[in-house]
Length: 92
Image (cartoon, rainbow, N blue to C red; front, side, top):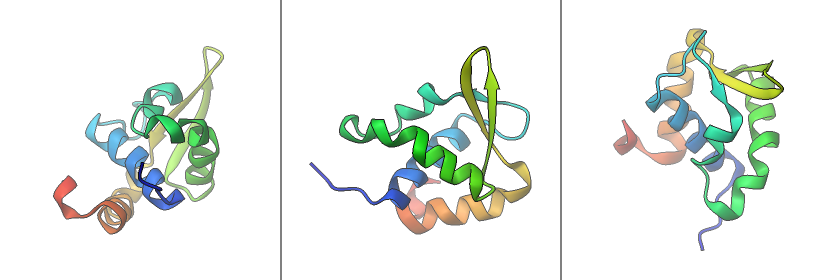
């Protein structure tokens, strides 16, 4: 089992959203983003997503009784830089 830092877990979440093209108005349920995390780390998903929203990387919405998230399209370069820093360039 690999111990991931919070930043690595956040990068995995951002990468999954970017790969699924969830920028701006296109959003998805947080539960779908949780699957980007290792099973033993998934219970951290809501806290990490909230931190990413507080940092301005995610939009946090309450829809249909669920939490939905999308990437801030105006911060695309910062998001790509964050993912590359913690996961490496091979992800793009």
